[in-house]
Length: 519
Image (cartoon, rainbow, N blue to C red):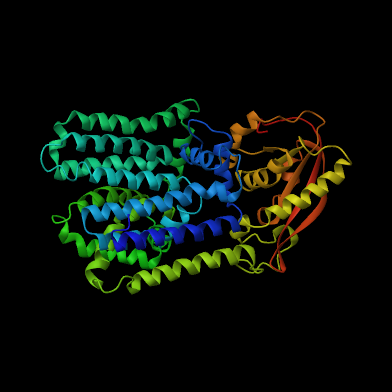
């Protein structure tokens, strides 16, 4: 197994990176996205309002169907996939270029913020998507890439397996379908022999089956997911916005790690003349460029998110690996761009843990804010303090109940976040029932979860935990539904030696009626 020094070194690097991420995963609480995707595992469906179902399946798998549902186990799938991704990338480049380029490529992957942290530590739809995306590219490289002559049986087998992994990429995140575009573009430009093969069309059919559960679910809800995402990239209500476009480009550089980003860009420029020598470069460009083109086009008109193009940059990493090999030669195992990328990534990880758990000032000073606005400029508070909120809320609610059981009591929320945090960190361990009020656009999956949970009856009481960094006036939210609303107590949530935010526990007494049907 360790016949090659590069293989041994990259395995050690993958192991060290995985151990570090396991430590980090267990030391910070879940983000608002992560607790929301926990709901995908708790309430599985063919698809969901925001994304397809695979991220929920991954959480179910690595938590043993939520039997081990702490933060570490919820994130475990992302960490395992990240390790496998680096290994897949190593073998892809080793088989198609050379082993030293493979080592550099896998190292660049591990030092990429998107590849190793956003999709490789946080549990997001990107986590399984990136795994199936890279695995598909590897399988395609074993089939359409090497078939200069008529495809043989082995080529076809690899292609059919790649069709299955493409389906899983689509079931992870919608734009997994762009792999089909990339493969088709490669065949049209470089290997049209495949157009005569029935297996090509069978493979396309298998890949498109990945969209079938998404379509079935959306058909039953008037295609609400497509409407929602279509509105996010709707281009017809504004002109060209160069500020959005350059914000997207800058965000991509930061999300990749600036050193990794510029090595990739330089690698693409440097290796462009090698497309005929290393045919894998052709395939990588055919897959990556359509994804970049789509979201760069959207970014000209609407605000977009930098991680949407993340799989494209992961696809282009082998260009960076080849560039490092050619420019630094065999005498330097870790040239300075790799060292700089590693230092920056480790610094970012340490900074994240410190800022989340210990930095009393938050991301920006908020000491002058009133209690109900404390911490409202600090998104890192989402990953800290919820265990304290649970512990103190339990005391406050138990005191109000005066001996009655807390299990089965109702908590209320008003939007998918911070409701998902309240659900996971308070309602779940205390056996309480959380219902979320609001429009479909604000409560997302809770629109359907509400229908599966016990509803309120006239005269019932409920509780509402109002965190100061997302404070909403409970009278504006619930006055039409309850006879009285009263604050029971305020919880000071410390970060380090200072208060980071507050949580105010309200009692809502005498439920009147469900006027708008959102409970």
